[in-house]
Image (cartoon, rainbow, N blue to C red):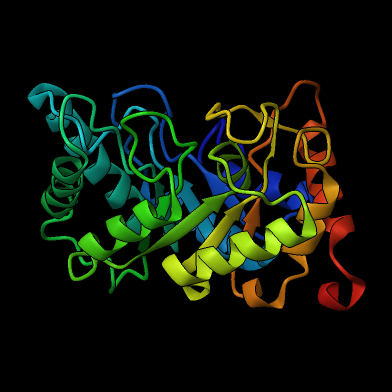
Length: 281
């Protein structure tokens, strides 16, 4: 949901879109410049969320952040930026902060895992996430070379490294799952993929689903989101997922393109229509 004009405005937009949860960026997603939230902005966000029943509030971290970076200057910037993300998430009383686990180009995967854990520990030093009700969600990736999180096993590995440091869980992106090579299109494939998800990450640890269709083919490793039902995943997998009682605790969020004004509302409406009436009541 757009935060143009102030993060609190995102709550109004989410309500007008027909949402009962929302995801925002708390600063520019592609700039290092820090953003300072005012106390009135935070208070307004909390007030509007309460009024409209918007829960949870999910914040997505800046795309530039790479806590597995081998370049010291870039790593320092990433740690500073991530600390700012955590501070803003706490100020906004957000429940979740979504993080891409990073790219370990120039190092071994084990070194990347260790670096990510150390960077998160450094960035969150002195901040009480548990007291603030905030958990960091590790998002699965599209499986590109050198990226952490391209498989359920890798996400589980990152979570294991972080437990004891900060409250952690997972965010699973359907487009990323599909282009990483998992079958969620066929009914049998979806059943097998979800069984594997439970064995590795655990259903209870999946707090957010990013419901995105894909422009690219299964196994392509290309992260290109498409409107729900208009891509290579199709409508039925989303229907199965949204009506799966094992994810009744999770939030479902669309990160679909806005090619034309109103596309965001159409995608939300498409997802809501797929939910069985008894689950809507």
